[in-house]
Image (cartoon, rainbow, N blue to C red; front, side, top):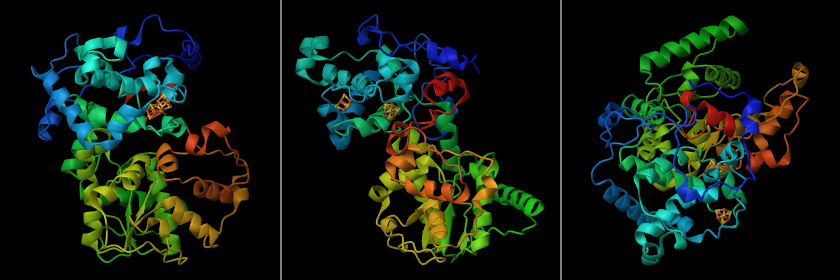
Length: 460
Ligand code: SF4
Ligand code: SF4
């Protein structure tokens, strides 16, 4: 890992109001340690049947792009402009009002104008103008257009992987332009050239071939859960059983595989199973649908769809009534924003109803899945959990809304309701940093690699 600047050094370098020395089109892409991500290993792409550039790194002077790379990129842009209405609309309607400019954590943390959402989208808009419009071809920069060059590809690699797809900018855009959707399209276009991140592709490969990001085989999941259950028994004296792959259970519980395996997820997992044991929930987890997270979503929507499909196939096979989901931001983003379009309607499942309180989760009647916070808040609201908030009187607690569950799902009240029921000293952060205006942690959308730590710290 490269040397990380101290917090005051990170901030002192940021000049948000200085005019850049050059026009943005003349600024060359620069790869500094700590500020770029490593390229995918060719073997990973080969195993998944994807194009690749062989062994290379972003710092290489000359990138080994395929001979017909311009043709590939033009075709990839054209295809997306024809098929993806949101992408086409977002390319057309921006009025450059600048309302989004200072809303991105990566701009605030780096001062780099290309991290302003408006300019991030301009990195592709200018190419669409320069390559596809006669006006743009004739008048070039005067029209806002520019030609496709190898430096443009390098620039895309930097800035579409310095966007965490958090959608904060879209909250402030009067037209609702969602730069995250632009980033998703641009990562797909880079993928068509064989350009992708090692950190984001390896978990995808594991999930594709084994069923979860960590590559845990069914027996490993079972053994890990047994370890966690023996820890619970040692600490609390309570013997908990976790049903695995049990047909006919009422509820399928799905969570990211990290919850079975690594800190801090294992503590969350122990909390989940203690809760289910306490209320006597009729549930099962699955070693086939052993991953709620979806690294496909950070690469291409095609992979995202493929990885997501197994959860509903497993719900059908196990004949459960509905699905309960653990915590993982992008898992919920995929569930709430994409999967009904990809796979719905899920007629073989029932509208979720809590067997403990009788609450029918009407808002989940389409996709038949309930968030663990909704489920738990409902238990508390019905007096099904005996809680003593004074046990946490030594703590002053705040809450950082997750980008995905807040902006993509509107889950604002449930976590606050739970926290206020388990502690007496809850304080909110400033109004412009919470609920739908929450800031990204700086590591979302597959950017949580060690080699990227400086940008993560600047953004987070
Ligand atoms: S989606 Fe988030 S990271 Fe991307 S440009 Fe908008 S605010 Fe920045
Ligand atoms: S707020 Fe919307 S319309 Fe205004 S510059 Fe940003 S993306 Fe364009």
